[in-house]
Structures are given as C-alpha cells and as structure tokens.
Amino acid sequence: MAEETVKTNRRPQVTAGRLTIAQTAAGVMLEEGKLPPQAVEVEQAVLGALMLDANVLSEIVDTLKTKYFYKPEHQKIYQAITELFSSSQPVDILTVAQALKAKGELELVGGAYYISSLTNRVSSGAHAEAHVKIIQQKYIQRELIRIGGSIVKDAYEDTTDVLELLDTAEGQLLNISEDNFRSDYIDMQTLVKQAIQEVEEVAKLEDKMSGVPSGFVELDRMTNGWQKGNLLIVAARPGMGKTAFALTMARNIAVEFKQPVAFFSLEMSAIEVVSRLISSEALVKGEKLKKGNLTETEWSQLHTKVDSLAGAPLFIDETPALTMFELRAKCRRLKMQHNIGMVMIDYLQLMRGGSEYKGNREQEISQISRQLKGLAKELRIPIMALSQLSRQVETRGGDKKPQLSDLRESGAIEQDADMVMFIYRPEYYKILEDPESHESTVGKAFILIEKHRSGSTGQVRLRWVKDYAKFENDDVSADGFAGGFGGDGTGGGFGNIPGNTGFDSGMGGFGGGFDGGMGGGFSQPAGGGFGHAGGAPGTVITMPSKMNDMPPAMRPDDFPGAGMPSSGSADTDVPF
Image (tube, rainbow, N blue to C red; front, side, top):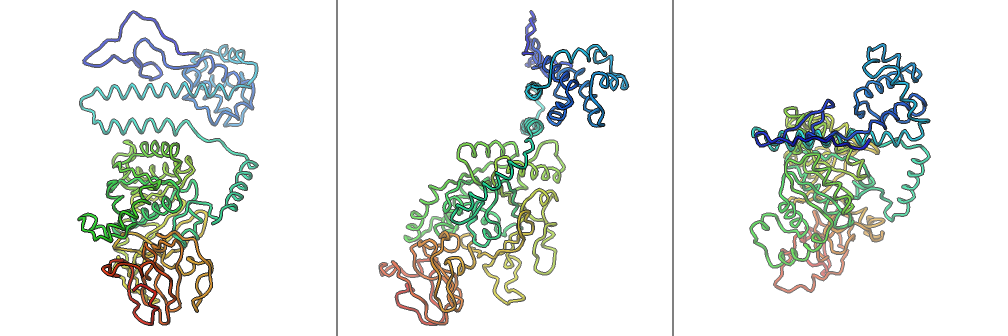
C-alpha cells in the first residue's frame, strides 16, 4: 500500500521551540498527520504465499525478518510460520492457526478466518522474493524516520552532547546497513569459473603477482602481494617504524606500480606525512627539511624527486578519531572515484567505535576489526591497519621478539586478520650483535609474519635507514639481477626492482652482490657511487657514471651513500 496522508484540520503545534512529534504504535516517530511507510497488502500476499507453497519459505526465510512486518498481527503470524519451519513441521492454514491458538494469540491476529483469507490474496508464490524486497524497503524507511525523529528530538535538548549525538546517529545508520543487506550464497560452478579466471589473469602478468605489490622483494615472494579482501595487521612498539614501513609501501605502490592508495593518518597531519615522504624520496634528513637548512645539491634533489610524488595516486586523510562510519563512507567514495587498490590506517587503536561500547575498549576494538574485515571484502581490496603492542614485550627477557598475544586491547584482532606481521629491530632494544652469527644488527629490521591465513609464516629481513625514516630491501644480490652475480662477479641479467625499494638508483633495478660482501647496490639518484658496508677484497667491477663530469666544487660527501672502499683496489672510473 502506498504511503497515505490523513487529512486533518489541526496544524503542527510548536511548543518550547520544537515541533510536536507523535509516536505510533509501531514505535515510529512521526509528525502529526502522516502514516509511516507500509505495504500491508504486500505483507498479506507474502504470508498467504508462505502457507500455500512450502518451497517459498525455504527461499526467503533467511532474508525476511519478523520485524520487517508493519502490522503486529502479521509479525505474530510470521513468527508462528518460522517456528513451524524450524521444527520441520508442515506449514499451512491449519498448522499455523493451531500454533497461534496454542500460544493464545489466534484471536489477537484476527482469528482463523483472517488466516484463511490470507491465502485468497495470491494464487502462487511466484513473486514472493520481489514482495519481500518491498516489505524490507518499507521497514528501512520506517527505521530512517525513527532514527531521524530521535535525532531531531535530541538535537533540541540543550543538555545533549553534540559529538555523542553524532556518534550515536552514525552507529544507528551503520547498523541499518549491516543488518539488512547481506550477500547471498554462490554456487560452486560460478566460484570455480571465477577462480580459473583469476588464475588465467595472473598467468598473463609479467611478474605473476596476483596481489598488490609492496615493493619489498622477499615480502612479495612470501605473500605474492597483498590479496583482495584481506585484512592485514602490522604491529610494533612505539618508535619501531610502523608509520615508516606503511609509508614506504604506500610510496612504492603509488609511485612505482601506479596503483591508487588511500592512507588514513589518525596520528600525524597530512603535511607531516608528506614531509616524511619527501625526506625519504629526496634523501634529505627530516630535521633539515624542518629548518630549511639545505645545500644546493639537496635543493636540487628535492625539486627533482618531488615531481614523482606530486603525480602519484596517493590520497591522504588526516581525520582524527575516525569512526567506522566515516571510514566506510570515505573508502566507498575513493573506490568509486579513483578505484583505490589498497587502504592503510595509522593506527587501529586511534579509531572510535559506536557509543554503545563506551567504557569497554576491548569490545570496541573487536567491533572495529570485524568491520574492517567486512569493508575489505565489500570493496575487494586489501586493508592494512597498524596496531600497537602491549608493554608485555618490554618485560620479556631474551631477544624481545613480539608474539600474537602481545596485540593490544583485543584478541579479536588476530582472529579477524588474514595476516599479522610484527616489525622487529634488535637495535631498538640495544641488541647490537646477533648472538648466533655475531653479525651487526645495526640498521637491520625484520618483518615477522606470525599469521598467514593463505600462506606460510616466516620472517623477511629489511634494511632500516634511520636518517630518512624508511625501509629498503636488505639483500639485492639475488633480486637486482635475474641470476644475480656469482662468486666471480659474473652472470645474471637485469632485474626489475623499483629504484627506491632495494636501493635509490636512477638506473631502476641495477645492482648486485659482489664476491667479498660488497654492501648493497647503488644509492645515488644520479646513478653512480657504491654505498657499501665492508668493501670488496678484490677489484671492484666498474660502471660508467655521469658523476665523473661533476664540477670540481662538488665533493663526494655531497652525495649521501657514496663512500670509499675500506680495502682493495678500485678502478678510477668509480666516482669516489
């Protein structure tokens, strides 16, 4: 039945600065003179169809809820039908009437005559699903009116806290969406087709990577990229480098792989985030950028490198105390307008849940993590949320490696996440030497994959560049080249690693390991000069460099990363 308007000579009265609001028997807040959205005739048709055709009930029982019915009588009848269905009893006029009679509700719904009359309104259940959608839509309209009326009423109250009112309204609207829109099952034939199509699409790719690449070679090798619909948790203690790790990845994805990324920074302002990106991209220390105390070379690097960032599809949101309602709305809009491939949140514990969890932080975080997983599946993109670890790590003896039990404020995080990773830097805990290999741990970082729902766990070693607050590939000897250099310094073809991931070479993916432990590839944007840890004991293989043509006034010290080998001979063509 269409929405009806009741004619009345009375006008809405204004009392104490607010409109008079009437509440109907159904509990819907309405202005006087209007009836709530309803479809009574459609409700009667659905109930009649359910008692005529048992197959119809199987098709719609999981989508049609008792509260969707407008008339209380219809709610009682449908409740009796579902109870019969649950107990595997036949559903017809007689059984429904008997069930209502047993509960003392038969006369309340209109008697046996009314129940039998419902079946006269339809000849079959052919259009039951379409009718159920109409009933559902009318219910949602009534709920929106109810919530809207409640918001209007509370907004007129001088004692109402505005932020709390907003939070309550957001939570109620979000609940309507979550409670009434569920995806249906998919048959195996369709799923197999989709799975085969995805395999075929991956096979066509040059890098054979099915997910969003991080730019860290070993990490991508273990994960095959960040997969669609996955919730990824990256956890660490404060100061370990969570934001730096996420920003380095965001930069790699947006700049090197040209995939749009949304970065939600709840802790830092957008300008602070961009300043850190500029620092790591142009290889200029953050404190120098803050003071503006840059050399001519650094100014040149700054203007050259910033162009790649300016054109990158990276979207930064600095909204503090973000709610799931806001995040969902922003992500949906970004997906629709820019087709974002990944979302990053810095960090989980700074988000806010609904007002119903006020005072219970553990339940609030649990709800947020569940909704993040749901959002990832809905948008079919990976969502990475950074998370804090509890102080329990600090009190633990030994190497102080984090564990899943160290996740702060909620055990639901590890349950909802498809992958849980920890950032671990021994140097952070003053462990400067590996107790087994006796290697220096300075500048070393490990990504510990402690949970991987669709793959193996393990650890990935990276290099931590403290001066520029970024992470890099630790060992490019096997990845900068297709075959890598052998012990004699020969073999291998060119690789395909982005310049800023393993090293900062303007030549793209050229770099390799040399016999004797040459340290890590090129580190100059211009493409010359080896930055190494130990030096090669033998002759260093030389490469042409434009730096040979640099003006005499420019010293090698002006170029971060270039240095003299500590031992051995070097060809004069290498610009040291």
